[in-house]
Image (tube, rainbow, N blue to C red; front, side, top):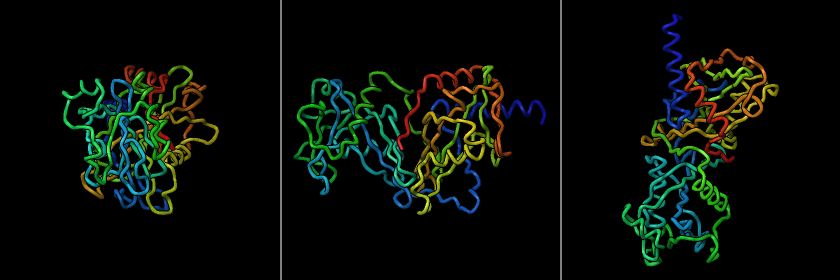
Length: 349
């Protein structure tokens, strides 16, 4: 390869790393399927289920709650949440659920967390702000009236989606909750509002047919040089791992695919790797069966506390991968800052 071609290749590789690092997206080219297993495209409501949940806070620190209308939890309270529908983006689904269940329109601020039980059940937790307030709202809500439409749902407007909605100060009255699993999410939202733990991150609208994870694995050597793991099979770039959607594979956690990729590339367990968290999410969902998939962009680091004791990165055990040294100083600094601050969207398995 000529030096010019090598330089152009490095620039393209840096562009992908920079986009993913910044919470953006990059086109997904599916990797070849593992031996003896076909890759099955994601199909919402058939072999996978995406759920959206929103934490909305007003200026008094109260949280927006809705009262369930469903028979199995009738009268109990929960955060606005529900299943995504075909042809929706993740943000569209979140906005729809909030408006159907509370009457308010909202603006997403950031992903707070992704919760998963494998590719068959994935929940996206958002922090959002209301853009409309209804009767009985606090003074802070009244000030929000000029920001958009919607009115807080009342018992007179009860329907199959919910009975009513109200702002809750988390103390009085003591609401009977549908489940206490939302309490840590409310606390996470309050902490983020007080001191953001990661940059604001929202899903990027890019098509993906499969449930996959793109891995940004970095190695910082003892001399300060920084390398990024690259895949060489198929289209060159950051490695991709794909989760199986066959019934026999649906119990596998999403991060299991990343662990298998790491085992294929690095001597295990001699080389410790820590998965840092989520950099971003890619999804489109406009063409059922073709773009129902999701790509999770995940960052990990070799060594203890993100540092490798040797000057050179560890040897790889497969020709399907290589280490590429990051020469661009600005990109290298960005990677190190993100690594040192540990500012990632958490993935809860």
